[in-house]
Length: 298
Image 1 (cartoon, helix red, strand yellow):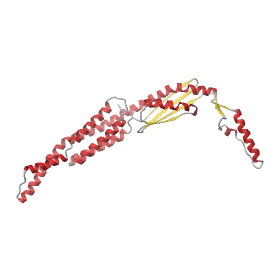
Image 2 (cartoon, rainbow, N blue to C red):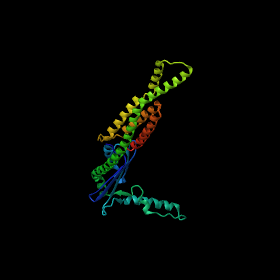
Image 3 (spheres, rainbow, N blue to C red):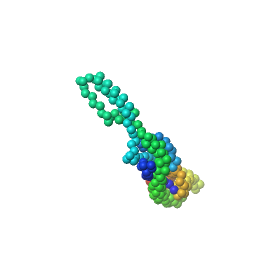
């Protein structure tokens, strides 16, 4: 069983008057890469949530978004009067130094963004301390939804890959059947050509010489080993797709397709036959499509 790297999961719950919502999205990536988006008040939980993700998701670009909404009667921040007064006092001193030639307006709203003016309320501190307990099961639920979608898409992906695998296997069978005929046909062509030329010169060629030339050709264009290895790769490929193992297999499949393409290229370069070449062109086309699809496997 394989899983896609594309998926989405979400979960939400209200705990002690606070509504929490978690969303997880994933797309392709050769490695595990996480992006955690959450309110600043909960930023201390980022490392723990990433570790929770890593335990169950192994590859892909993962974006985890956490949102929370407080009850109407809960205020997350309060104004630090003493800090605000210090800022105002300093600004008034600066305005006096400038003089009456210039007018300086003080925007109290802008001052709220200065360090130390807004501080968390006791209610917010309590919520932040309890957030981990509330978020941990929600993240697990969102991961469940993500993995379910990735598994569903992975099954569709496996079905498509098996179709390409069957096409390659079929073409490879025809190549294996055709290979012995290539040597026989070369033997016949060479023999006819040599006899034709020697007849004109009224000469004869020794059969051992002809056999030796055919043997050299047969050795040079022998593709039995490459066909056998490629057949073995296809069997391993099918086993990975259908064995039901939940371990990540994307990198293994990616490496396997590289080996498939290597063997197909060797067959194409060694076989001196138009029919085999035609089959190998289709085999390489299917391998390329497999390679593209495998990039989305976890």
